[in-house]
Length: 304
Image 1 (tube, rainbow, N blue to C red):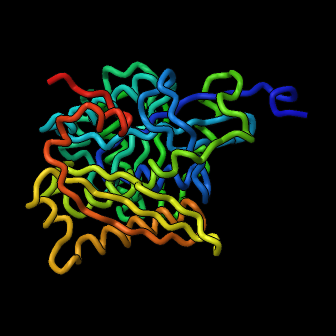
Image 2 (cartoon, one colour; image 1 turned 120 degrees about the vertical axis):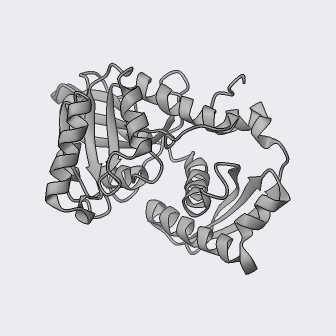
């Protein structure tokens, strides 16, 4: 007997909104379980990247990741921020992630201000609560709730999984009734190459965001499953100038080695097998002005 025939099913898109580095990827992994299920991006349903699908009781929760929201300075920045907001407007529910340690900083302030334009129910998720005293957490939750109407507030430590089960159960209750969008046996993992590129790009941002504000893109050139079940991945990091290439490589190749190690670790956690990751850095002048690159990344090309 199928889930559909025995029980009333529910299904909905949940957008995860937050500044860079608030822990969205970690939370997706914690909500979905050890292996993230990726599905092909369906342009008509959402323009953001679907990062994972959670089946909780008779509900299917489709987690839509959005690029970290920050103050856009260049065309690519504007495209990423606009994609993030379209993901929020297209979803059924919005989870707003705040880094409990950072509190309501400038980036969080900007997000809360703009969230007023999103009509869907919103849930506040304070992440990294293990790093902050309880009094500070309660004060932060109160301050955010005074700024905006949140249906629920959750305090989680996505890395350890603390508080994640309660959040998952609530999301399952809040998504609208309806049939599953994706059959349980057809959740494809084809865009793993895309996700792997996103993970490496996130690591570059994390290590170099002061020196290299989003002026890089990553493409997965090859993805080979080897006889010993491990995966060999080759990726190219594209930058716009030779000076940026030197920044990414670092002294004696130290920076790219560190980026590769971080990325390989996260990709291996997701695919559940050992990963061999090889990174190359190339200069591609003015790629930030090339509409084709934006389409490949699932972004709209801003006209100006």
